[in-house]
Length: 216
Image 1: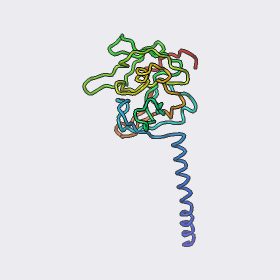
Image 2: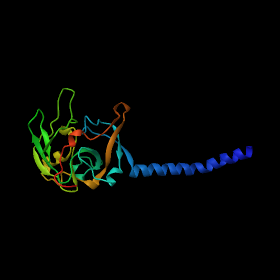
Image 3: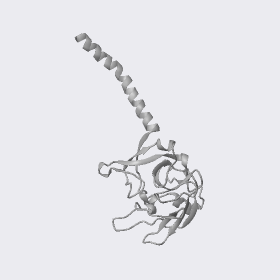
Image 4: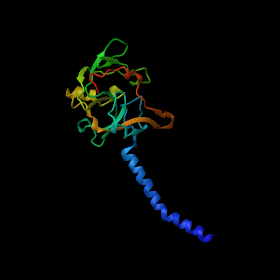
């Protein structure tokens, strides 16, 4: 009996490096192809995402379909967008996909709204400050059509976001102000840290009535 137990213990220690290796390999594969965590370094997505929030990103979903309006995505930013060359991974909300016409803005309510394919877009997630301040949909007017294979992305904190609108204000170049679909790393779908802010990042219902201008 003692010899049998000793043999089992010896077998366990011989197998342990293999088990650890398999666990590390699985973790690497999951991170590379399925899920990855990212932290939020800036205020550009407030109040939806706060500085130092941790989000979980689905890296697999866009292998089966393209990003959709209203989704929060993590992407590799164009080099021309970066004030810091090391800040490659950005997070923004998809406002328009290829073929969409986006106009700023209507003025039929208390807050200006973007018009996407002729539909005024309510954006309940726009930044609101502690003093009652409410962000506008955009402080700059524009009328653009998103090129095919590209995305128009904006931060929820419009007055503090280096997004498509900000780039277009400077360049007046739609191509330079959008990102290629293949630069998208994945969809941020949940805030998991801090625990008190844990929440699912769903698409607001206001995006559902936005029509497509062309079949997809």
